[in-house]
Structures are given as structure tokens and as C-alpha cells.
Amino acid sequence: MSEARTVTSTASGARGKSARPPSLWLTVLSLTAFILLIALGVWQIERRAWKLALIDRVEQRVHAPAQSAPSPASWPTVSAANDEYRHISVSGRFLHDRETLVQAVTEEGPGYWVLTPLQREDGTFVLINRGFVPSERRDPSARQDGNPDGQVEITGLLRITEPKGGFLRNNVPQHNRWYSRDVAAIAAARGLQNVAPFFVDADAGSQMGGGPIGGLTVVRFPNNHLIYALTWFALAFMLAGRLFVTFGGGLFRRNRFVHEPVGGPSAIARRTGSDAGEIVEQT
Image (cartoon, rainbow, N blue to C red; front, top):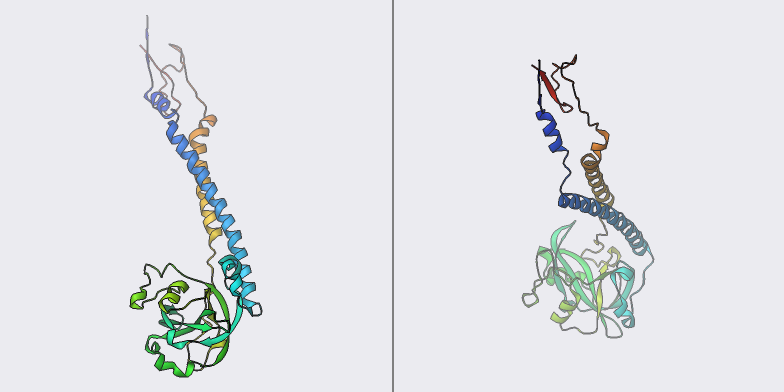
């Protein structure tokens, strides 16, 4: 008389362990990350649309005919969104003895922007960025021929004040060190009142012989938002694929179990692998 001994397969136990669902916190974290990545991609698409509109708007302003500078009555409403890079003209008389040098790096090399107050007929002032001078010409005596005395008309681009200083460097008015074109701080340091809240980057046509080099305004807006958006979306879909494998892959795997009767024709078969069932040995 024979008796059967049943041994549970080790592989079957391992498979049962692997089929255990992920923990709740890992599930929530994965879904949150997926939603965040999609949101970042959509945000970059929106930023791209905004940047393209900005570039188009600025291009139109830069190449439009010069208009009169904003009047003092409209100064409170001047803003970057509505006015920056507008092509304007302003007339008056330079106060060369109150100019300010602001450190700059341009296509001409390192040096300074020369900001000079322009006094208009109504007694108000507009700071004019007359252009660039290298370090060896920072002293006004080295460019007297380029400093006109009488009435002048300047055309250029309206720029918004820069009150936060330069990159990792703050303006030090008491030591006459300037790293940004902060209109209010420069006006206070030079004892000026009724100063426009913007300055004007003079164009090349306003350059005087021997004076600062005008027309060096850089109008460039980096637009990498599409690349950023595709990156976020790609990461989101990679995560989605991983989630599908983790949570949905089991739907496509068959759970097979083999039950061999004692003394059957295949009783001595040894089944191994992920689908191994019971191993039945005949005695």
C-alpha cells in the first residue's frame, strides 16, 4: 500500500509574496507625483504662450516709430507690462556734472553705463542711459567732446527701474558704487527731485562724437518652455507606465495550480518556476 506526501513549492510561496499589493502611502505618493508632473507640464505650456506673446509685443514696441515720453501725470501708471521697451523720444538739457556710472558687461567688453539726468522744460528730469564707456574712459574729462551743452533730443527705449541691485551685488550709494540702474536711489544720491520712475536707453542715433556708445540694449528672452514641458510630460508617462506595471500587470498573469493525483501518469514530474503547483512524490 502506498502513501502520498505533499510538499508545497517554494516558488509558489515566493509568488504569493510578490503578489502583495503596494502600501497605501506609496500608492498615494506615486499618484501625487504623477499629478504634479502633469501640472508642471501644463504650466510650462502656459508659460510658453505668455513668452511668445511677450516677444511679439516687445518686437512691435522696439520697431515702432518713436513717441513722446510719458508725461508726469501718467508716471504712476507706467509699468513693465504696458510700457517697457517702448520707443520714445525726450528733449532737454543734460546735467553732466551729475552723471552716474553703473558697472556693465557688454559686447564691447567690461566698463560702465553712463546715466545722465536730462532736465526738461517743465523742470522734471529723466535719467538717460547714454551708453557704454570702457574703464579707461570713465572719467568725464576723457570724453568732453561727447558731452553736448545745449538742448538735445534723445530717442531710445523706455526701461523700468532696477531697484534690486546687480547679481549678488547691492548698490552702495555712499561709496558711489552702482551695479544696477536704480532710478530712485540714483536721483536721491544726486539731489534730484521730480524724476521719472523710468530711464531711457539711448539708441545709436543719439550718440555724440566721442561720447558713450549707445544702442547696445539687449532685447532677448530665452524661450525653453517647450523643452521643459516635454520633459515633465515624459517623466509623467514613465511614472504612469511604472504604475501600470505595479497595479495592472497582475490582471494579465494567469494563476495556475497543478494538482496531481497519487499514482497518476505524471506523478513523478518535477514542476518548477513561477507557475509551479504542488509537487507530489510517490512512495
